[in-house]
Amino acid sequence: MKFTFRGGVHPPEGKELTENCAIAAGPAPKQVSILLSQHIGAICEPAAEKKQEVKIGDVVGNSEAFVSAKVHSSVNGIVKDIALRSHPVLGRVNGVIIDVSPDNVTKMPAAQSLFTDFDINKYSEQAILDAMGNCGIVGMGGAGFPTKVKAIPNPKSPKETLVINACECEPYITCDYRVILEWTDQFMAGVLLMKKGSGCSKCYIGIEDNKPEAIRILKEKTSRHADVEVTVLKTKYPQGSERQLINAVLGKIIPTGQIPPMAGIVVCNVSTAAAVAEAVVTGAPLTHRVVTVSGRGIKKPGNYYAPIGISAQELIDHAGGLTDDAVKVIMGGPMMGFAIGDLTTPTTKTTGSILALTAKEVGKAKFGRVQTNCIRCGRCLDACPERLNPTKIAHAVKADMLDVAQDTYITACMECGSCSYVCPANIELTGYIKTGKILLARKKKNLPA
Image 1 (cartoon, rainbow, N blue to C red):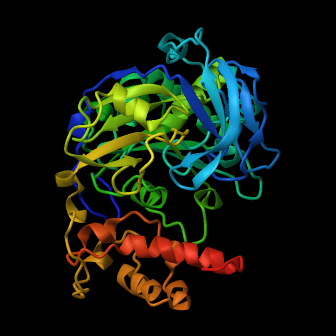
Image 2 (cartoon, rainbow, N blue to C red; image 1 turned 135 degrees about the horizontal axis):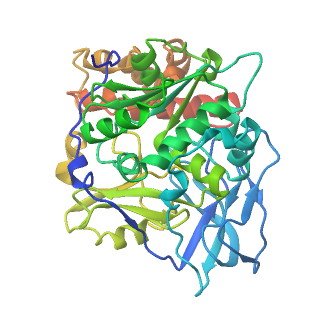
């Protein structure tokens, strides 16, 4: 039986471009920009100064706040400056700009032999949590919530179930899929470490049925662990959203305003689990990650192990550059990612993909297509995985009726883009909702609209 959730859409997958591309070494950059905000929580303060020499793994940003995560240098080099740099979500934030030294050593993935016959009993719960914090591990699937904060036990709300998000439901992205295939033992070690560190007694790996080879490997690997189970899910977007994933795997609904740990559930994605394993076993901080560079606007799509802080331009150039018909570059997936106009924008811990799309691929948002009036078809209601009324919320924002938008649960929208995708009138419903959230936040802080 294959499980799923109510609503959602089925956009073209596009995964065939990179699903068979093994993880390859990324480019050796001349300069990186380590942004001081790469996670949910307090922005880090610089922990390095101009002209200071740094090595791979040195802390260059830190915060004393509970909800935060250290950031580390991904190269050997000299700090050139601490200045504003483009951020795919926040616009511009401070970053530590490092000129790479000629003697910089390209960091390679951890040796997989380290995780063969992995013994979880060698590591205590506290050692696991300490490694997560010291190594700056955050959720690498998008939001970037500090992993130690998510996993740390809470006697008032004990965690019982770990759910591993192996869905990778966004089109084009295959970095997690390749991690499962190529770094299987490391990933499984990370699953066991996450489970022990968070105090969970049961683990489910949720994976969509469009990944048969990964499913076969995971079922083989989990057969020796009675408390780890593979749950095969129907392929549908946004199956990987944690609320929808929990609903599909466990049949539970997380109420609006709550987060999974309040219900005794911890959600962790594939790359995060692999990073936890490397941090605990080798002590290596999170300085590199696998990035899918794809789309038909890329000449040689692939999956690249790249230093965090490298620019989108350098990764695109490493993948052969842009095709003549490329019209849009996105950091993240095509449904929830952010279009960027500045290709010097650096990657962060949560950058799982950089996409270059052609006008044909952009599809629904066809260039020059005219938006028409809402025809009251109700398709957005059917598609919304949170069972909201996207049209009503969007119209309220458009009419500057923010109180109505609040009353229709605008804050419950996760901005997945399903409503915009199915709208026959080509109304950018998700865009209006995002704008409404910004206006409400500014109103709450008594800032001008």
